[in-house]
Length: 287
Image 1 (cartoon, rainbow, N blue to C red):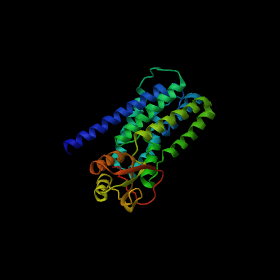
Image 2: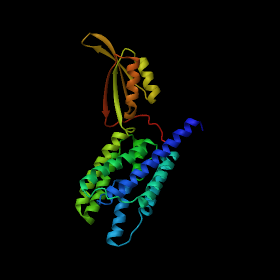
Image 3: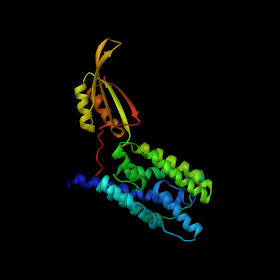
Image 4: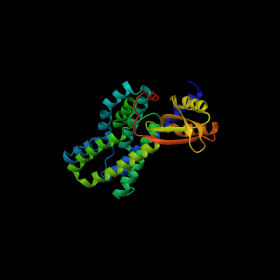
């Protein structure tokens, strides 16, 4: 492996370690003390732990529940998403689980609203860093990415709906105050993840340019996506105009626009979000 490749892999590992520390710190200092539930398998693990602790008086470690829960999802990821992706995700799952049992509660605040907001921010930050490093926090994130890669849909909304079911169970068992504030936490977390990590979100480009061939090559080289050329008439001047139409991933937009305006400073570009794309859309494979 080249030196640049080694540095890149080391950077990924450092990001995963940082995300694990943030995740564990958040669970013990903002979530656990305020009886808030995180999303996905983390929330399920918290709920199971609370059931055994409060109802049966049995204290079970977080890692004892969280790691086995992720096993089936990890197998799905290993088979359909990518081996390296699953390996990095496994590192995060193990580290965050162990650190959650070790990181102390510093009792930063007892304000449940502050815990919900900052807990959501830290939770979203940790998961976002993980995704940027080519990994995930496990559990429902594995499932979400599998749906995104297989069907080309942004599945975070579905995962949020599943989390609501877990929160309803918690509300019925332990009271609704913590469950309702947990909805705020998960909403903040979901919004931050979608802001940080936009790989599976799609945006449509409509580009009016005098250099359609050059602009098409830019889109092709950066994204590996195709484009369609339309010819029409600009009514203001009555001249023939050429327009390229293409759909790309949201995280590629800024780079594409930079190169477009470098090639054609007079290009007119309209960028808008694509709610759903059906057809032959290229997704870069996760390794």
